[in-house]
Length: 306
Ligand SMILES: CSC[C@H]1O[C@H](OP(=O)(O)O)[C@H](O)[C@@H]1O
Image (cartoon, rainbow, N blue to C red; front, top):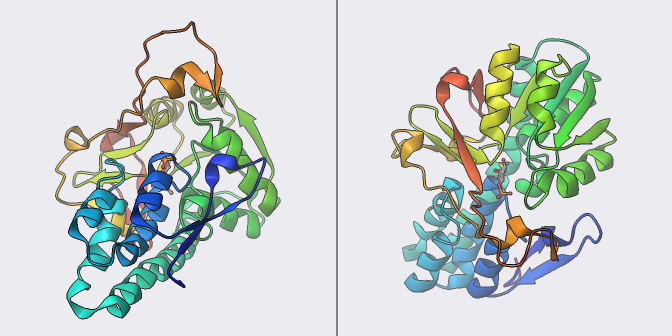
């Protein structure tokens, strides 16, 4: 890190792969808020590296830590680096790079553990949003399990929800699956529960933004609907997330703050208005899946049965 944080501007994918060179906390906060960088583990790494850019300024560190509320990883990553502030810039940088390197190792371990957990040699996997390397550093969480299954020759296909309103599935997950050569089809969000009911899916794999102490899990809006559909269809519903996403200080999902991202993302698609001018909208960016609808939580260290 030569005084800058470099990251892919995910708002431009899949059309353009452009690297952003971030040199100030203000630039990083903006990138986080507009989802140029997004995904819980990636936010943790960005937050940790952002503490180096803050150069000890407590106001900038506080603003960085609060840039998005739901993914616990952002605050956790900031805290990991900030804990070394009294030991000089090099110590803070070393802590931030450790967050990055630990995430790389964690995603590979989750991929292995998740693939080992699943039974069957020709698996049809459904997923929502994006939980690949773009949402982490490399390989990702739920999509890291998909990549491991693919590498082991055990993947039939991925059914990826487009993931309205910001289309992380349509734009990012398909882009990552195409790059890894994994067979996939894109579906409308509302087709997910129906295809589960039709027996088209062997397992649902999702990432997570915050896992409460009782296992209730906040993830992209639409996850809860898949959990309900999976439960009724008797299909395993598996959360894949690093230990840093588990928040023991939050007792249940009721205490998880769900980010509301405003009406514009609902009434427009990529800048084109799709509802009458002035249409009011509600835009919770996440929902909470109760622990009793979750078959297993796979981390880099263990499989948890909530
Ligand atoms: C690997 S966890 C990624 C997680 O973050 C996403 O949210 P956003 O795109 O708003 O950052 C989504 O909830 C994914 O499951």
